Amino acid sequence: MGGTAQTQGSLPTSVGPSGTPGVTGTRTDPSTPDLPVSGSGTATGKSGTAPSATPSTGRAADPDGAAGAAGIGDPYYPLAGNGGYQVDSYDVTLTYDPAANRLSARTAVEGSVTAPGRLGRFDLDLQPSMRVSQVQVGDTDAAFRQDGAELVVTPARGLDPGAALSVVVDYAGQPGEIRGGTAGASGGGWYRTDSGGAVVAGEPFSASAWYPVNEHPADLATFTVTATVPTPWQVISGGVRLTDGVVPPPAGMATFRWAQRVPVASYLTTVYIDRFSTEVGTLPDGRLIVSAFAPGSEAGRYRKLAADTARIVEVLADHFGRYPFEAVGGIYTGQPLAFALETATRPVYADWVDTDTIVHELAHQWYGDSVAVQRWRDICLNECLASYAPLLWHEDVDGTDLDRWWTGRMKAVAGDARFWRTPLVDMGPGREFSSVYDRGPLAVHALRKEIGEAAFATVLREWPTRNAGRTVTFEAWQAFVEQVAGRDLSGFFDAWFRGRVVPSDPYRHPGGL
Image 1 (tube, rainbow, N blue to C red):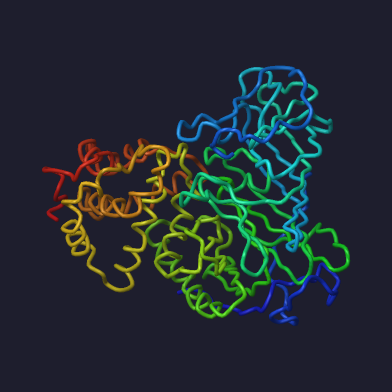
Image 2: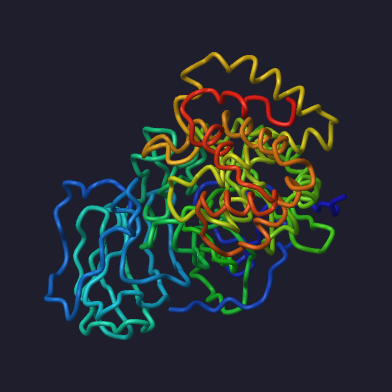
């Protein structure tokens, strides 16, 4: 069972002047004690669509070496991510004015050069709404220009293969949504809340809406955000809250620092700025559960849902192994978003959130967050498994007969050609987030029956345990399943995961279903 929860009215603003007038709004509970904090946190310091019609801005220069690619090499989103380097950490320091939707920021990017020769130019992904004023590589000013969602950087001197990469970017603007990803019309990015705040969410793109990034899940990095906002606005992000080294803000402002210290993909980073309330508890091993609840009449309902967090993590850990991060929780935005998102440690939820959604997003902490996909064609490794997790929850908690569920569902969809038209692997760009949610769980349960309970349990637990902190392919997962099962399963995988029609015999009724 999970630990007890301690209800809090609001995040503390003790690093700022107490009671200083700020923007319009009131605290839920001005006497609320501080949220637990952890350790020291001193600052260190693309979208996949074609470049927009926004003119190039900034300074051009001749590169001292070869130019890195404008994309990481994913054919689904050719301009997503970048070539020539990899990132170890992002450290974002920002000031945000909710009334004007105005963000001013400095982001420090640390990594290393992966190009085989001297790197004379490289790109970062940053939406054109963010206007860059200065770029430094090392301690030296670098030439730069913005071309659509690409920030093209030319350091004064080229960087040798394997050399450390240290980039600092100063920029400002009015962040917004990115078109062309999740839910069709809006791919994610910076969303305004009904109360005037903001939240970041989106897959495959969101990070480039507010900081320069190598925006592809193949490049995992740690993430820290230090955000200063007018009181009584508050800020929450992923990971744990830090206070050491936080510079006291000006009068009427408050500063919050959050650190995600386990490397994750950039779309799994978030920030939520609002006048929210919070609830704090612990997992049985003492790791923090911190959740934020949007202001409004639905906060009580969200709190009741969040009360199951420790129990959900416990049930999922029985299947997937030890929870892989140092904190957990949720961001209950109360917004009519078209999706929920598994942002690392603290998923972002829409106003329609329910328990199955929470189970799904928390399952992603193992499948998708701790273990990431190398290419978007492999998204079934995230979504098929996470979509099966609510069934495991109901099987364990409610005694649901999953064989009976599977038989009934197959009876309903076996004759529907459209249901089977989109495969679960290499489904094509723009179709990643479709069949994985409904066809995916059927395929996973079919696999369970095909290889047997013991082998299936081993796969569920050992895959995220052995691959934590790595990027993987679907082919590698298939090979692992075959290794555990002790036999070739290519026919089964072709029928259930790669096929475009309902599986036929001998794969139609795995394990006697």
